[in-house]
Image: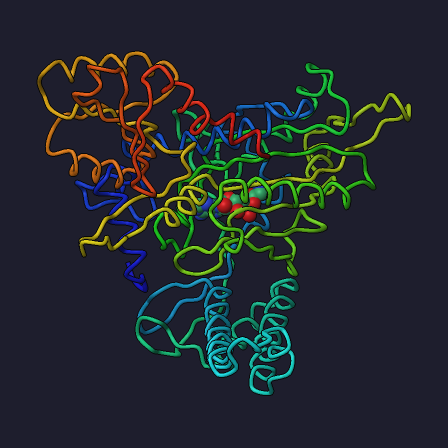
Length: 513
Ligand code: GAP
């Protein structure tokens, strides 16, 4: 992989070393942009999914779940626009033979201009100290103004050319900016071409009768085609939502940055069906609600920002990304899209079946509008994992590596240690495991010195370690050691369940929403 900062490399190697993420089919040298989740990764991923699922389906009495298939009738993708419009603009460098997304080459160029602006800001902030006013500086500094207007101009031209399908101008822009191939430094480019991102496969045994199928590139269409099934069988009234999580597949060209951009990934999507005309209000509602869901994890509010789209996807009348500060900068984590009645309308046309909703209050039939929230589970995993990985220098000069995963999402909630492997301590420790394992994921460890056992759990993100020592035999108390502060407290075994429940259960996290 190229262009990875040291901290990002550490994240990838920690994920592998501690059983979170492995490259797919690694013994065959892996498969590009496909990854497997190991024993701790799958636990963290399940917990994130559950946080999302329960916040949608359990906490909203007008949102229900669905699990639709990956394979869908091929006409689905004609109706959704994916066959005609789910393309990336690609450009090849004739010398290096490397293929790039043209829009990403241009965005990377703009990111360099933005880095120059940031450099000016930090220089000025050092110069002016406490009296520095960043907003005013950005608006008035002549050099920054020139940079900003250049960046805005480039993005505006690119947005317009892509919207008008003017691929010749996208190439002209790359040439005007003298963008070189990051690999070879050459500026010898082919024309820009559109490339469809769906994976095709076949259904059926014989070559002449087999039907061409696509692996779904989003889970959303499974919700749209089931809209009336759910509405009628659940006697749902507008506004209501359908949520689902599941795999999606995209033949991504620029597939780098670990699990940020994968070819096989998982989405968590919710389509909220509403009366036409109310889309603005519901779009704002879900924008705010989803950001709150993210803030609630305590990863730091400064790590999120909205990015409203100028170039809208083929189905949307308004769209924003919730961007997150990944190790390689602010990038899209979640999308909130006002999809109008684009999808239901097209499915009606292509299927020749009515998908209208009967509104008992208005006594009329109409096609609902839709506001969608769509987040990549793997991207969310990367957000949590990358912010959690911390290296600390301790007072004695040694370093400690820990994963500050939000406790409610941690793969293992508690680790139970007998101080020594004798004197009846393992038996007491194992009894605690047996009592708590019905409700929480618990680890038991009796190997190595206690300090090393703590370090192992720190690196796995286990929020609390419980040690059974000789005092336990006398007074039935244990020590609880806190992962982040390394402080210890002594509590009675009988109050352990309550302690874990209050600090670690997902319900407590959901109550804060
Ligand atoms: N139904 C709308 C939809 O699919 P999208 O913006 O293309 O919208 C939604 O995707 C989310 O899915 C993104 O915000 C991102 O988190 C995730 N996602 C998209 N492509 C991905 C990929 N190649 N690898 C990992 N996650 C991806």
